[in-house]
Length: 527
Image (cartoon, rainbow, N blue to C red):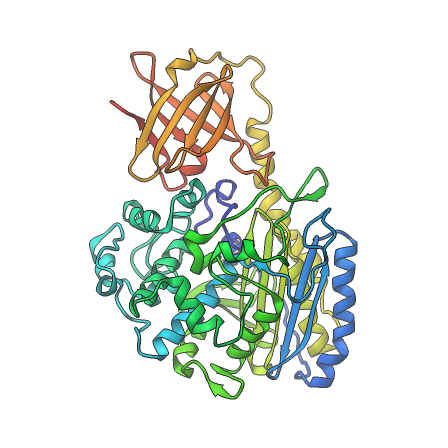
């Protein structure tokens, strides 16, 4: 199996939870499972809710997250809906059940629900070929381009590497430009043979499904899902999120405290990571899935079409915490766990969002946790503890501690490694060439243009379609400069390296955080 996490340092701005720990799934040991448990009943669920509420309050009181919101559904009833903490540190406004959060990759199962609605109305098929809907879409090779389907893209088996397009979105490119440039990316596996979690692969499938019925993705999501379920605070447009008064700000921890360091506009990958919603609305969507497409007594989405999203497609190995087998469906992770099958998905922006939905379909029980914090194990800790309390009457382990350690392993060492490499310049660094030797315009067909310019006695690089992404460079050693690409992780230092030609001028530049796929080397214009 090919994994998309060769260089987590340069990708964590965009990756959701499942992508981040995919590298751990194969080697995780199989842990002991519960020998017996009681099935959920209303009395058992209701008895646990005060304990869950106290856990959430303690999490906020201990400053583990600035704010969070929780929804619980049991047998088609919303039995718990409450917010805790604050929308923004220093702002004082409380989080409640109507506070809108950015969902990050929790958008994916919402997107597959929208496509299921379209499929159920015979607007398209899960096995519709993208080439038949959008002949302009191309992957790197001809056969996958001709054969790739909506299903392939929603279960991440197209061969498209996981990070493809993410770096272009960060530079400010729009969806159409990014999807067009995916044809330049070499596959990470042969077609349909490997799993590689791809934001823009799934986006391509979702956009094609909407195009099959003559709609934009954003309009289709609203018409086929949000409006029928009365999800009035849910949108696939970032502008709508910004227009909400009751919205949660993204937070990352810096200098020992939560700070709002960055903003995140995910419109380019809206089906994969651009939904914003609140606990109240997400609860209605959970009811729909636990009801197998029924909502308020009506079959809102065809049972087979939505059921396809819960079928296993790609094996992911074993869960890193529970040891249970995990597979990917269509926008859903499927775990065969200690209480039966689990339908779930997580979301994360390193800018400061963490979300989770976890459903036990056999028990008709589900929980969603939304938080405004840099990736943390709080949502999983709450959900796993809640299920234990309902099914066993007690927590079988310290889930919050286990999930917290996993996140520490994923993020801490990556940042520490970058600081170790470039945090301290060499004792006797080799001097740089005259700055004019590096200044100039560089480009390649994937990244586009980069302008290196002199500024205040140093260098800066201007990236993106309009050159508006401006990053100052600091000299490190001879032709290697460092830069800080992520506002939410100011300690993260990465390298920009120039190659010098016989004329004493740089003829190319390699930009580390854009080079995970080997497409971050740009040639100077004229060479």
